[in-house]
Structures are given as structure tokens and as C-alpha cells.
Amino acid sequence: MDPGHALGERWAARDEQALEDAYAVYGASLLSYLRRYVGPDEAEDVLQRTFFDAWRSAGRFRSGERFSSWLFTIAHRRAVDTLRTRRHAVVDVDTMRELMGEDGRETVQQYADAAEVRAGLEQLPDHEREVLLLAYFGGLSQREIAARLDAPIGTVKARAARGTRRLRELITAGDGEFEGEAP
Image 1 (tube, rainbow, N blue to C red):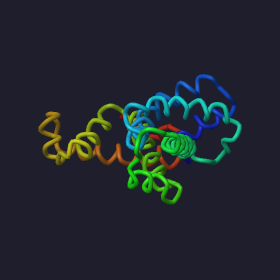
Image 2: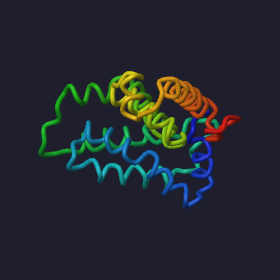
Image 3: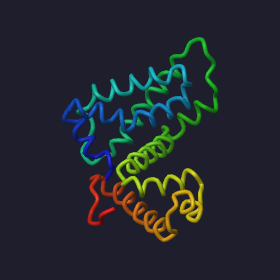
Image 4: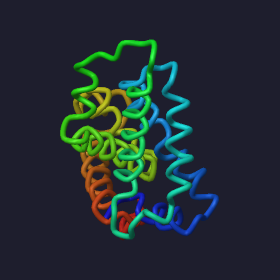
């Protein structure tokens, strides 16, 4: 189940806080996705239309559906609409092909998955998140992380293992709760 599953359920029930929460969790990823296709000048407008359309059609969200994929699909459609309605600009054919190919499902899914990983990372304890960020986004080895954090290598390995396991649980279970271990 999607970590955003509960958020999707609240969205479908038109919980106004869900709108703010969805923007906080997925807004940056959606904006990055949209900039890729419509450019930085129009991306924010398309993002607003995406959230407006998603809110307006909240009743169409189906329980069990991945909320992040649903949002990214709406963003994809708004990007296509924007590219189609441009009158004075020339749209790059490769960009249009990439966006239109296979209905953009693969690209939408990649962005949705990345957004889920980022949302999951935010739910990890600070010490585990820091190790994972340094390893995967900083490209540091466990020895380099241990040196940077002034921590024993065994501690870094344990934090990486626990963090990775918890992140996997968050992404697959979608409940956002940690089971068992204390930090």
C-alpha cells in the first residue's frame, strides 16, 4: 500500500487538511516533474491546476489506488493540455513523445515512487535518515559516513540496515508506523 494511502482516503473524504498535507508531501516532486515538460515559467501554474482538478475530482479517487500515482497522472494530463494549447511556442517533439509515450505511465510511476521514498525518509528517525541520505544521495561509503558523523562503523552499519528496513516497511505497508525497535 502507498505511504500516501491514508492521505488519499482523507482526500477522497474532502478533508481540507489533506489538501495542505498532499501539497507538503508531493508538491515539490510534482513541480519538478512539471518543469521537465512545460518549463519553469508555466510549471507552477500547471501545479495549481493539478491540485485544483484533483480536489475537484476527489470523489474519483478509489480506495486501494496509489494516491501518488493518481496525483501524478492528473499532473501528466495537465502538462499535455498545456503543451497542446501553446499557440506561439514550438514544442520539442522529443519532449512530447516522452510525455505522450505509453500515456506517460512509466514516467509518472517513477516520479510517484521517488516521492514515496522522500516521504518515507522524512518519517525515519533523524539518525537513520542522515546515514541513508549520506550513503545514497551523498555517495559516501559507510567508512566515510562514520568519519563524518564521528561514529563507530558498526553504528553506521546498524543505522543503515534499520533505516533501509524501516523505509521498505513504510513504502510497502503504507501505514507510516514503525514497529518494534527504539532508535
